Every structure is written in C-alpha cells, then in structure tokens.
Amino acid sequence: MTQDILGKAQLQFDKALEHLKKEYMGLQTGRASSSLVESIKVDSYGVTQPLKAVASISVPDARMISIQPWDKALLGPIEKAIQNSDLNLNPSNNGTAVILNIPQLTEERRRDIVKIVKRLAEEARISVRNARQEAMTIFKRQEHEGEIREDERKAAEKKLQDKVDIANAAIADMAKSKEEQIMTV
Image 1 (cartoon, rainbow, N blue to C red):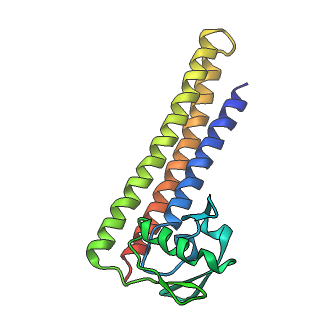
Image 2: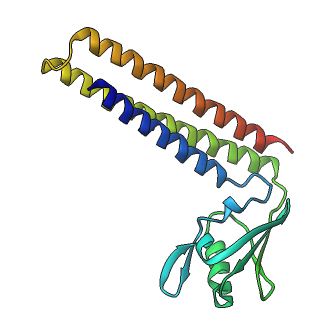
C-alpha cells in the first residue's frame, strides 16, 4: 500500500526533473542548439505545430541554426513564429532555409539567464514539495483510518524524505551545471 504511494511520488519527482531538463535545454546559452527552436509553434495550413514537425533543423556551426522546411511555403510562417517567440533572435530567409545567427551573450544577458535558471529550479523544488505533501497526507489518512500503523507511516515518511532529498540534490546539480555553462565565456 505505501509502496504504491511512494512509487507515485517518485514518478512525480521524475516528471519534475524531466520538465526542468527540457526547460534548461531551451535556454539560450550563446551556443547554437536545435533544442532552442524545436518547440516553437508554427502555423502550418491552419494547424499549429512544433517547428521540428515541419522542418529539418541543423546546426552548421556553433553560432548558427539552419531551418529548412519540408515545404517552401512555410518559410514565412517559420520566420514569423521565430520573431514572435521570446528568443529575441532575428531570422534571415535565403529562399530555401531560415538562418538564425546566435549572438555572443553579454554579461548582463548571462545574469538574466542565470536568474531564469534559478527560478526554474525553484519551480521544480516546489513541484517536488507538493508531491511530498500529497503523499504525506495520504499516509496520515491511512493511519487515521487504521489501514497502517504509526511505525509503518513513519517508515514510509522516512523513505519518502530520502527520495525527496535525492530529487532536490539532482535539481541543485542541474541548476549549478547550467549556471556554469551560461557564465562560461
């Protein structure tokens, strides 16, 4: 019974970590990466789709992303989607592909991105705390209803806290690594 609850909590912890990883991949770090633009929504024939579904994305060098749509008619909508995104990048269209040049990050912009890294890490920690609280509430309710004994509840809470500590350490490691990556010139 408590193992099921611990398993569900672990799943929520894993989801929080996976979400944080995806958010970090989308942050502009001064290096070109296809993950910067893959999830940008493009209006394609009345349907909104992620960029990776309508185009081939390549990184020819460390400061450039080339986006080649499967259909040339999508060059305009892709350009528009990138301009409307929060990337602050200016796309150029060469007739066959949309080219994005990634500028060198300024010190001020690096500090702003580090603030975003910290905010995202805190959101992940909050998600972990909420999952822990949910599990703790279930353990207490089970004890109150006589489904488990007090010693079983305490043992389950200790196991849960161990999992929370591991998840929080992973979040801290990811945030520290991303911060170092951003601040490296």
